[in-house]
Length: 318
Image 1: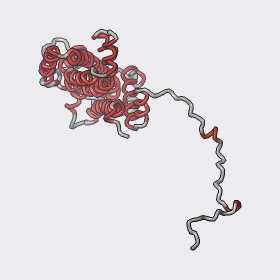
Image 2 (image 1 turned 120 degrees about the vertical axis):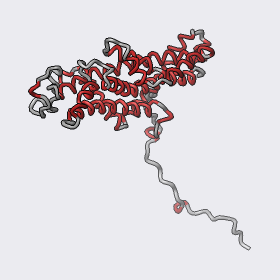
Image 3 (image 1 turned 120 degrees about the horizontal axis):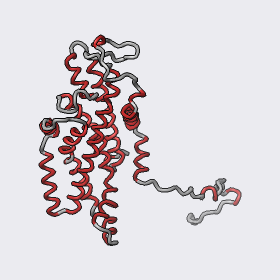
């Protein structure tokens, strides 16, 4: 019986031989050039650049800031110059938004009104951030009875409605200006920032770099201000951006109700308050300052949302 397990080798010329690769081995194995690793902020910037809402918010905010800093670049008309002959006059050359009941140029007041509203919101945001960061970080880092006292104090102020407290307290000032509005809003606006920073510091104070700094003999204040707070900048920036729009609205609300900036100050809140008397006759007078206010707040809210997605790893969408 023949042996079927044996295999007869094929002649050399009938064997299949794989083709030799033509790719140069040195080229194939060449290492990529070294690139510096991207840090936290570099990665966040790349993430921001890919979001259309970020660019929309950036354009709006840059335009508002430009109007706030140099309003004369957009309007050469005195916003406090009133001509009774132009009362409720419609738009014409040089006055695209028409005139108010008192004869003020609506376009000029809309442009120049940005300064008081934005500056008030910006100063309030900075003051709230300073108070909230100090209270929240000290409470979380020291802990114990300090945390208990500051947390209960935060809860007390957090339970007080911001606008209601501001309306009541503003009545106590004989002279009302930007600084009094900033003082009142800051006094009742810091608890939310303090709570946010307290949570961030509690999460960061047990990290390894904090333990290493403590082992090297760095003081408590040095660890807090040099290591912990710099790593908590992301929630601080996000909250400040969102709060800026909130406090601009708060100032406009107080001025609208007659307890904010004085009536002779050109601001969006005062113009909205004055335009309510002619709402049925000429609603456009109300539309322009209200539209500028809404657009500004929208820009800051959009920027806050995009910053939150870019700076918070848990919120990032892949």
